[in-house]
Amino acid sequence: MKKIRLKINQRGKMLLFCLTVNIILLIVFLFIFRPAFETNDDAGLANMVNGAKGKFDPHLIYSNYMIGLILAVLYRIKQWVPWYTIYQYALMLCSFTALMYVIVKRSAKKEYILAALTVVLFFAYECYIKIQFTKTAGVASAAGIYLLFYAMEEERMQWPELICGYILAGFGFMVRKDQFLAEFALLSAICLIMLFKQLRQEKKVRNHLLLRDVLCAAGLFALIGGLYFVDEMAYQSPQWQEYRRYNDARSELLDYGFPKYDDNKEAYEKLGIDRSAYKMLTKWNHMDPEVFSTETLEGIIALKKAREVNSDFFESFFEKFPFKFTTIPSFWMFLIIFTFSICWGHYGWSEWIAAAYELILITILYLYLFYCGRYLLNRVDVGIWLSVSLVALWSVSNKSRAFSYRTGILLFAAVLCMQQNTARKNWRVNTEEKEENAAEERAVLQAIHADLDHLYVFKPGTISFAKAYPVFSSVPFNMAQNFYPLGGWTAPTPLYQESLEKYGVTNPFRDIIGNEKIYLIDNSIDSTVEYLQKHYDKNVKAVFVTQLGKYKVYKIEN
Image 1 (tube, rainbow, N blue to C red):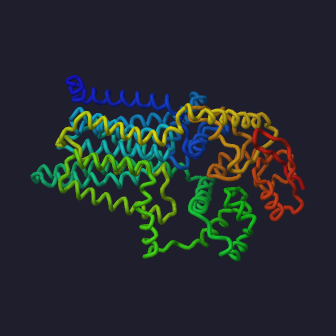
Image 2: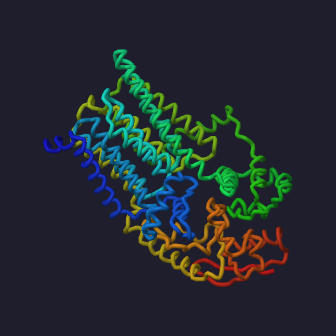
Image 3: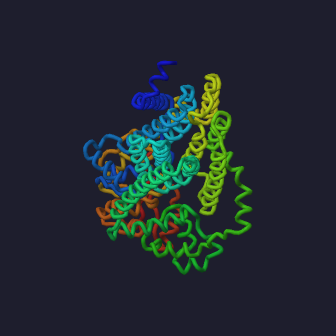
């Protein structure tokens, strides 16, 4: 144990130790579990920049343009390497290493290695095995901000930690800025603890520390401000401005709900939306620029009634919360960490004030998410409760009393058992069917790609690159050149619109009628025919062409 203590007392050896532990943990996870993208958004982001559409487009829409530029360069060097997945794993590995480094170094007690490993164990599984870029943003943002606080905690500035904190926080912001802002707000509770500590210093030292902290904060704001400016400049062309306007309207409806058709029938009909169009739109099939134009979508949004923040709203919220928290796995991890910090941390009045402040922040955040109608999303909750857990762990410092190794082992084992209860479905031995399904899906995509004489349009919920290409698979260059989705955030992008232009198509719904060059993959063909008959040609009919795997392929004749 003396050797361990000597190793972790020095910054370089401590960092190497934490990095080694996290590399081993990552290898073990990948050996036991089969990783997958939690949502299909990551596959969509990857296909923007990996050459699947014949170009390396750095416009990642939801992630910063600078990340897109870096990935575009990497894909140009070696297109077959899954750089999108690798960059997320690299960023998460660095983030968890940084978190473990701060937790152990602040405690200055060797047994706290087990406590740090327990925290990393739970949240690393969530991020490594169920990959989602919002989670990656959450853990990178939390790690970066935590490092910054650690660098500024003592009177003597820790410059290496400060620089690394800026880098990780900057990447967290670039991966997804909204998640960064949530993490920053929640971790601001640590500012209170540090501020109360500094106010107890003599005036000269206090003023020096406050000025230094303000300058460090200004540096962070300047960094994220610069990154935000670069990203905004990348979307100044008319095509991208129109896309962003359209996508904002699409997202407002498909992510946050539609006004009910029966309650607004007359208004819908004035906008040119009959019941068949309403059904088509609510099923994500919105790529009809004549029926579902930007102006039409904005007109539908205008029909939505703003949710009133009144007594009924709060009553509805508190009927669900805090009870709904119990459905969030990472909330239970927070409870364990909070209990641990109460038992072995150092809680003075400043820590309790910070805890009350954190409770207020959590309530406000979930009130906002509840108001928006988008709450209890695991990809968002993981970062939120990681940040709250880190605030609780800030009480664990060199003032904390030591605990026995038996206690640490029990803590580690309890979290491991809790996690494996839900994680067993992702064991490799239990997910062999997923690999078989992916192979079948790839075979379908390859068969479509081999038929370049035809453009294949498909509805959301049918063929999927996310299903066909697991996280470490590479999508062949130009693989998606004759694919076009009839909905989703990628479909209206200039990159995807080019695949329509190559086949002389401007409106895939209208132009598919009587066009021998366009095939349709559809799992609800009757609704499509009904829609086309009401909006374009009452004589249209669907003719079965072939079966590709479990998907039926049609052409539309008139």
